[in-house]
Image 1 (cartoon, rainbow, N blue to C red):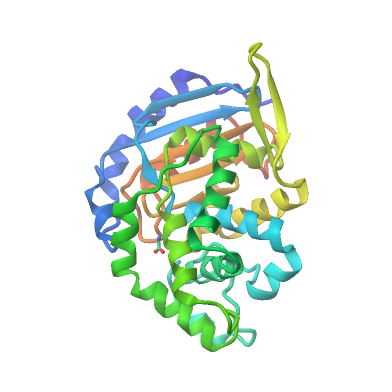
Image 2: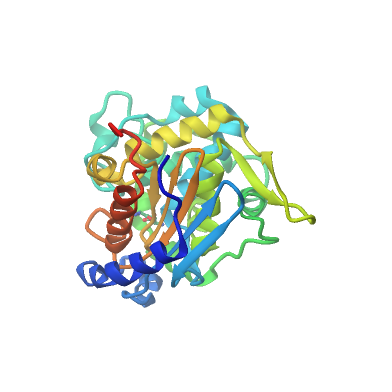
Amino acid sequence: MPNEIGQETLERLIRDYRPYTKQGAVAAYIPELAYANPHALGIAAAGADGSILKAGDADTSFTLQSISKIITLMVALNDCGPERVFSKVGMEPSVDPFNSIVKLETLDHKKPLNPMINAGAIVIASLLSGGGSVDARLQHLCDTVSRITGRSSIRFNEKVYESERRTGDRNRALAYFMKSTGIIDSDVDVEKTLDLYFKACSLEVDCVDLAKIGLFFALWGKCVESQTDGTCSTKEIVTPEIAQIVTTIMITSGMYNHSGEFFLKVGLPAKSGVSGGIVAFSPNRYGFGLFGPAIDAAGNSVAGVKMLEELSRSHRLHLVSPH
Ligand code: DON
């Protein structure tokens, strides 16, 4: 059995890997994200026994950005079923950047390659955006995140949303292109779909929230709830089959066009966002939440990835292991 993760391990990771923040840069294509402190670094680990450990800037809030893609995928699978979801989006990893448009025209089926790239997540948002206002749909996503994290409410960062809405022409292009090819249904209001996508990206969390989201997938769709007598119980939010699909897509596509290298080195399901967040987990054991806004060319936190490599090595967490 791998070693337990202790407070000292997390403190050491922050100490040893903070210098790596210098090797990345904060995302600036969404102007509001450029205000983040490039040297910030935080980590939290949530154990299946309900324990939470955290170190560094683990209490700093940041927006989910692409980490929202695992939530929207999960909600779409739950609400519409896998058949409908995968009639609109593929299951294959992408070698192109997360906001690429090229394959939407060259692939015969015209579907975005997977639900973790922007085009795929926008299609997922189109499945969720019909029937009811965007804010009601957003509330549905927030309620899901609230249940998983145990937070009474999930804040939405108006400034980041406005900033992305104002500058989101690449996403607008992806969405209108997909409507022209019939991947987004003809009766869908593209602006409403984009509004839901931008708002989901602008939901605020911290490392502990991400660790709890990771633990929820580690427990196959169950969240841990603390009882008044100090004990913990678990509650199913989605079926294990849905959690399994999201987990598999995280392994193959969660770290974009670096997913292969990440899985080789870290060996855990994970999802990153351009704000510098990463959620990762060790099935049945731990959820991890990391934050380091200095990102690499693929959009992944440089120091966050390094910390996960070390944690996986030191605690033998790699899922494909001879030990
Ligand atoms: O649509 C976008 O470009 C951002 N809201 C999200 C992209 C993102 O997080 C990619 N991440 N690594």
